[in-house]
Structures are given as C-alpha cells and as structure tokens.
Length: 92
Image 1 (tube, rainbow, N blue to C red):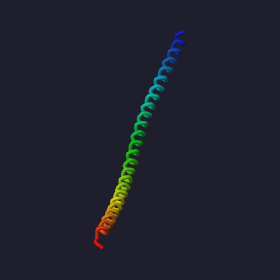
Image 2 (cartoon, rainbow, N blue to C red; image 1 turned 90 degrees about the vertical axis):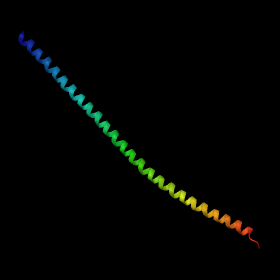
Image 3 (cartoon, rainbow, N blue to C red; image 1 turned 135 degrees about the horizontal axis):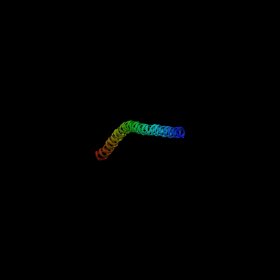
C-alpha cells in the first residue's frame, strides 16, 4: 500500500510541476506577444509619420508653385487692364 501511495503522490507532483511549467511558458509567450505588438505599433507610427512628412513637403511645394503662378498671372492682367485705361484716356 505504501508503494501505491508513493506512486500516486509522485504522479500528482509530476503533473502539477508540468502544469506550472506550461503556464510559465504561456505567460512568457503572452508577454513576448505584447512586446511584439508594441514594436509593431511603434514601427507603424514611424512609417505614418514619414509618409505624412513627405506628403506635406509635396503639398507645400505644389501650393507655392500654384500661388506663384497665380500671382504672376494676376500681375499680368492688372498690367493689361491699366494699359487699356491708359489707352482710353490718351487724347487722340
């Protein structure tokens, strides 16, 4: 009888030890999953920031170019209008 009790006790102890090892392994993999998720989020934020910066530069350049073009065209039309007024007011 003592031998059977010892085998059963040993079996139970081995089972609990195995369960605690599995639980520890799962905890560390969950921890690693969280770390990986954090790194992925960080990298995604960096990529988004880089894309935003590039887009802002392109947009700023386009706005500057368009504004400059509009300013020149406005100045040209103003000059033409003033020339017409001057021609109309000249004595003939």
